Image (cartoon, rainbow, N blue to C red):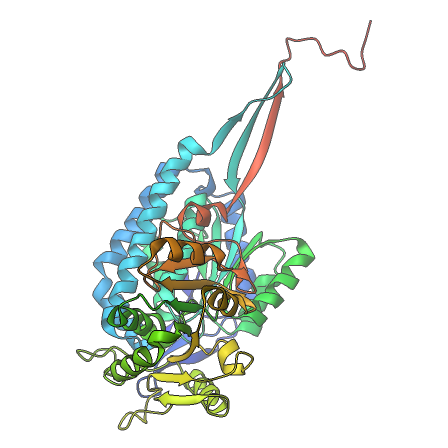
Length: 491
């Protein structure tokens, strides 16, 4: 089946007529083809979005009117959850329960931002108290304009919603560029939006590769704001490109997140959250807690139990019952992670895993992998792998744990586990990270801010912070014309 671009309210072929293959990572077989968008298609999409913003009804609707459309989109996503989740299993490889969870979250994101859009009718104007009589002033929130959104492949439809829903709620128009590895559910947003009554041009979706479609989107003068989730090198290039036109930018980039476990934590509880923190979604999670620091008195016992439980994880096709670890997203990602594991074997002790499961060689599968005894300056301890690979080290003091946790160029997320909640709160405050979990790892809520410190990004998504990404603030000050001024014109 061939899937088309979505531009100006209709599906269409790429200007070049070219397509590219979509591969099922469970067997490396092509199961669909998608239009290969390029610079001409990006220009068509931005032109449509620009026209829809400058002259169309969407930015001029009330928040309540926009909310009605967003709610219908959320309702449709919820109604189609089983179908959309199965597409994500085939496209991405993740187990079906995780895909269903993602689609439920996607519907929830649209419903949440529908509520915030409605609130804008009362919250978009704020009166300001001035110190000088005769003047009144107000701050008005307005949509930033045309938003260019580029999303990754690990949560295809959910990541689209994190950008599309708040942008539309604010009154912006959008050009979305999904990952070429997982384009299918993102493309379905076009149909869902049109059926919900979104005006033509308010949402445009161009599939294609980074240099051919992503770069022209970041460089296009008709785009007012860029929102990107992905790697640090690509984020850096986008930021540099945006600087030419002083575009607004929000970036959610990589991570090498620590999880600190104190000795007063029950070992079974710690192991459960460590497993979830790194092996959920095959470890293809930007916030994955892939560096585990364990207080010395329980280190050996915890490592033994963690190894035992990791070896029990069922690996296989995402539609099989009981599977908790599916294939990695693509052959190239599979090769990348295997190369990282090979490098890790030279830098630390491979405790378990590290290879392709027997009988699953046809797909992009990797065993849950645990390393120990690596140096703090080793590559595998410091660099993001984006796969089911965790590194574990002991620590001897709270100060030692904080130092090692913060010794990273990344600062997306961090976690701490302790029965002493005062200590846990103290350590949480000491982390240099934008997202911190206490006695858990990875729970994500639409209502709470998401984003990182340092090289993990700029700005915050989700919650009211996500909406603010797509709003400008305008000051309007008025002089009471019935009062005399007389600065220049005097009798």
